[in-house]
Image (cartoon, rainbow, N blue to C red; front, top):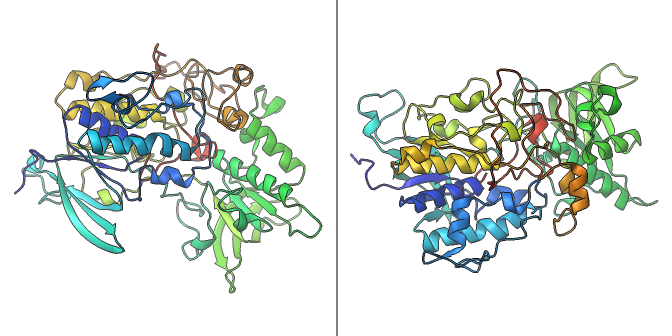
Length: 528
């Protein structure tokens, strides 16, 4: 039977955190094998490539990745020019998802394979992870067994299933392709699976690639986070662009499960919170002007596609003035911005220690609790906090946060740095975790909205925001709402926020349309 010696470390997902893991492993002299279900690096991120990130380039590049990209034959080239001609983009610009893929992930993937000895296999979906020769229930000698990773590889139109053995497995596959269902109680609404063709996801490209799907049609947007707000405002803009005496009306309905969108709007004087974000203000104005029909207390029970396949009927309950509380709505498309959850089915034979609430590794569950922490107050954590009963298996990046929405890309980079150090036998480096973030501020979508065509935010806009970046460290743990100042002081027994350092590391690239901070998880399946 195969032992773990001289086997590669399998990394699942070729997104920012997965490729950062490969860079750190290669830097440590370990052999990374990256398995990506998509056809290129950052495949999941490319799906929302039209969305601008919250954080500028200076916080979006991992340290080991930067060293690899800016080094030729072991000698730094300086000025950000790397061996493959890579030049680091304007550090103050906010990239789109597509720009992050094109100008960072694609060159990084090339550098990893050409110069760092890493292997990256695209079109390779992981079906299952287990111990080689032992199911979940077998304990005798388990710790000596390597991992077995079963994959389905697609090439030239054919699909083959094969097995790969590994000394360790780092799962950075994210959650982006695993959305939460529309139905209540955590289950799909009746008929939701049969109505999949009517679901546009949480981040459709309303004004670009997907325009024809929405123009002159009726769209239902479900959710109360950044994704929903971004899609709603894009639909409003589309309706204004297509307005005309002969043009079919672009109709927008917004459904939320709560009783009021005040948290998203920013509250104003009603809740004595003075700072309101541009996103919330624009959305509130659109609702009050009648451009968006708002439904509250919505519970979707059933979806029924029409016989002609053009519309879907949405049935359930809702609060709307002048009716009996029944929801009976016929729409052409549903933008379901309901958040995401991890796909744990492929890990059924791995012994995991997960929190029963958020489905994150148990030791970090209290650190990422969205009731106490925003993206900027999650403490640094590393390999020691990410271990499971099966040693050598790790959930990292967005997937390590389970259903919690507080993921910060800088946290993912620090996770994989620490894990690579531990796998290389450098226990001191693995345990020396820290999270270097910009100065105090609050998470906000306003900077992305204020950016010009090149993604640059003017000094005046930055000064007006009161932030040094879009995801800075608030004064203490807090609940996050779009555009709000900190809503609560840190409890006396709360974990302190990480102290800022002189040389900030990467901050979160949460897309302006992500489901992040309010209602669900941000981005990242097979590439967060």
